[in-house]
Amino acid sequence: MASTGIPALDPDRHSGEGRNPAGRVPGDQEVRTYPRSVALRGLEIHEAGVCDGEVVAAVQGLVPQLSTSAAVPSPAQVAELCAAEATVLLLARLDGAIVGMLVLVLFRLPTGMRAWIEDVVVESAVRGGGVGEGLTQEALRRASAAGAVTVDLTSRPSRAAAVRLYERMGFERRETGVYPRRGGWGLAPGPRCGTR
Image (cartoon, rainbow, N blue to C red):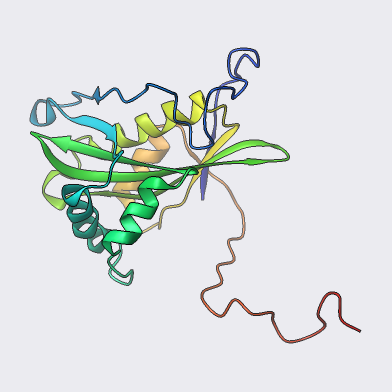
């Protein structure tokens, strides 16, 4: 797991007023360009907004490149992702084609606004050229604008290029335990709260 602190923000400027939980700033639909390399001049990063057929097809094509065990999301699931207030689906376009995505999740805790970067995936043909970095830069910009105290992400050690990218961008490895639980959301055997 990696984490980076967001620089201290002026509480009067970044009170969260006028923003929804996912860091969307009213009227902020601007497309940002990230010309990192000659090969990727004209890379555009933007929020998906409406999940039309092109966005659905792109997400459905990218998910298998991210995880061979994850089910490809249905059009309804992609639309739900786009509409959810706590998530921002960022897309990377190169020459008009969607070549990458990232999901930014923002949520408030008693200790402050937090952000997670999830499901970062780039088309294999353009990996290593700055698409992932552009997506991550935009996610960090939005997290900062939303007043996030930290931005967290996870990456498998086997994804060496991604780990190098995140470390270069200021993320730090944090020693922690992650305890995933899959399916079967019933209570574990043993004493149950509120029973006699």
